[in-house]
Length: 359
Image (tube, rainbow, N blue to C red):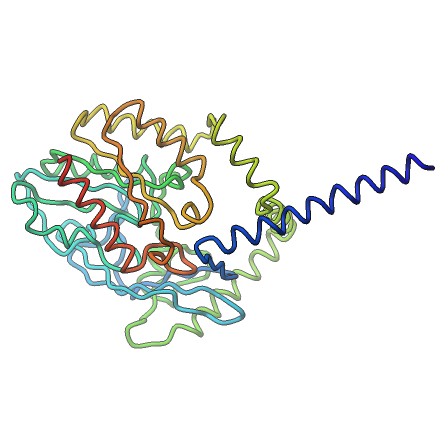
């Protein structure tokens, strides 16, 4: 009987101690950099309906010579909140930059994801104008993509233009991204909001002249019904897993161990690292990698994918650099995690300094 009481007492004391430690860690990390996490339920990326994306075999671009309004909404406390609204300007090759690009001219190609594209503000490549008279600059940043898709787009661009140097701006999250494309269903949804069902990644709507709130509720209604019918048990398991994965008493030792011993067998990561290796072999000393900090990495610590990519690249080239947004989370949107105008200005200044010193 005493053994049973002692065991119960030990377990109660043990879990109470873990609770105290977790509360202590929550206070420390919550106050760090005054980081505020908002409970956003769902994200909706809306484009002015019409021709937006142009898919190819293993990559996609935008339609050329377009001005496309885009807005991002989140569901917060039963209301749809607009996180940002910005204009996407594409050039003659369907890339996000104001200036057109010409063949038979030496070029510096930027590769990357939405941070390079300029999602949420405007492409900072537009502000490099006149600083590199011997080169034209090409913005190959495309939202949602990773290194494998960077390479596919690079092949397409280098087949059409004289690429002399490449600058890859990457996040740790990029390593977990597969090659993806814009399917016909999404294209039809983007062209006319009446074609949208709710399970597309991107949505078209006449947002220049209309409030999309009713449309967003329609999309939400489908999502709720779809996931309730198809995935309720899976969602419950995922919710429990996410809850425990966010506990610092689990997260901190897990990340420490992963950062020290991490060796990935994940197929997505293997393919993305292979693509990085191919780009280095192709451009040798004329390719430069810039690691970009993510908002949560500024608040907490680098993700293990970020550290793993850094080690992988540094073994193959000395051209590896960092842009950390001055370790200031006010450079990011509160919910979305993309840089805001101030953040993109910081990124531009950092990249410019690296280029002036090394290119």
